[in-house]
Image 1 (cartoon, rainbow, N blue to C red):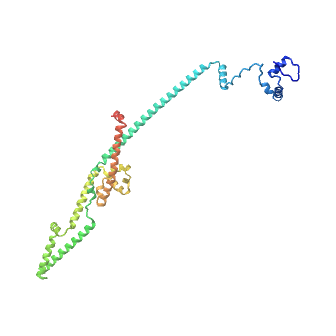
Image 2: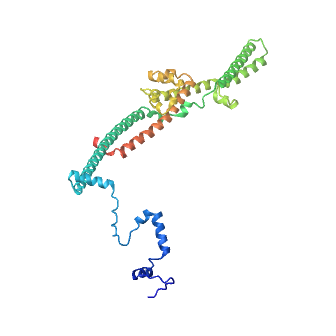
Image 3: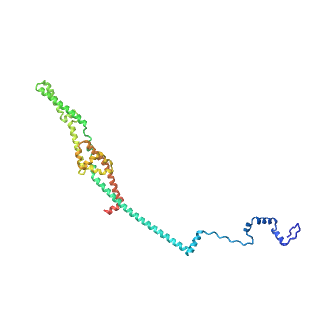
Amino acid sequence: MKIHNPNDFDLDPKTLRSLARGDMDPVRRAVEEHRSNTLPAAKESQPTAKSPAKTPAAPPSDPRTSKDLSKTKSNGVAPSAQSLKKAEQKKAEQKKAEQKKAEQKKAEAAESEEDRKRRYRETVAQRNQLTQILRECEALEVMNYDVLAIKHYPQTIDLISARRRRDLWLLSCLLSFAVFLIGWQGGLNAWVAGIAFGFFVAISALAIPPLRRLFIKNAGYSELVRQRKELEFRAITHIRMLEGGNGLAYQCLMMSTYRKSLLDRRYRRLVTLSKQGQLIKAMRTVAAIRLYLQYLLEAQQAFEITKNKYMEASAKIKTEFADLALSEA
């Protein structure tokens, strides 16, 4: 190879080969010298072609795994044996937890059974109490409202009017008869005595009810009084039948939990007399009879509620506690 040498320097073959490779390039040497002067660390870090290749560094190990390995090495136990022991401990703990759950379920079942028996006894006691109330207050179902209400009872004003008419009638009869007697004795003319006697006979005929109804539609005083007595007698007889021997009004007081109005102050004396068996003697006026009717109407509403409660208790025993009822039977 012929190299152009303008300065005609004598160069040895080694220098010529380095020039041919480019090692003797002055620019490259200046760059390498600058790098060596300014960046020595970088130069040192760069591997040379002749330096041997460094082995790759091992990845950093986890400190927790190193600790576990050190512990296992210090204890002298293999990791597989320790994992087996932990698995066995977990199984034992699971068995204990399952046993505890089973015991809790058994305890809850026993408690629920006891609670069920207690509720059954309470329901039976409630049904027995309701049965007694229905038995004692059964007379409410045969109460006759019309008899106790006394709808057609003559009013006081009617009695006063009938009494006034009766007094006028009696006065007319007496006057006509007196005029007839005076005329019969000769104190008056005969025709006056005859007219007075005829008037007396006509008025006296009105004492007969059928004849009086032909001329007067209003009932007489005696009829009104008799009608009053009949209605009062029927009402008192019906009350005596309702009260019986135990006193219906007093027995209805057991239903006060379903009807608070049975405890009103206006009914207290009535209930006390019923308890003492002297209620019939106190039934002397229509107001007392109608007050008794109001009390029985309140008691009837409570009686309907009691019947519904009894049906619910009986149905509950037949459905929810059928096995307990059969076992006791």
